[in-house]
Image (cartoon, rainbow, N blue to C red):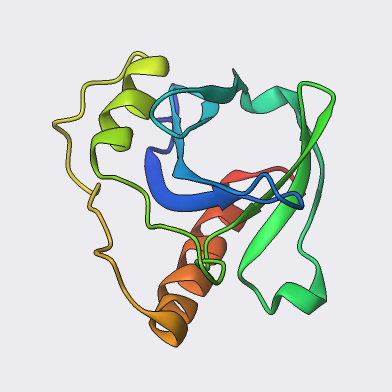
Length: 134
């Protein structure tokens, strides 16, 4: 019996000091990737995701993980002053994983302001908790 790999795409930001990047975190075919449209910051099998943690001080809005041995910090709550991910980045992220963009369940969260990102960000974190290894 084969299990269907989860498919999920979420607007997200890689955070790290002055290098915050808006983009999309996507998973399909048992792989995970993050792209900002110009650069794919990682694309790896889910089996290479380790040391996943959900810092309490992020209030359920993201996670830290080692992917391919490198530490990444991902938030689904828009950092102050950062632009929203461009919807065109989603297709790039899916292409990296070799998945067509025309499947159900993928949508773009519009350019929300301030606190409006908190609820969708926490909901995205909850979805990713079901996919990422503990």
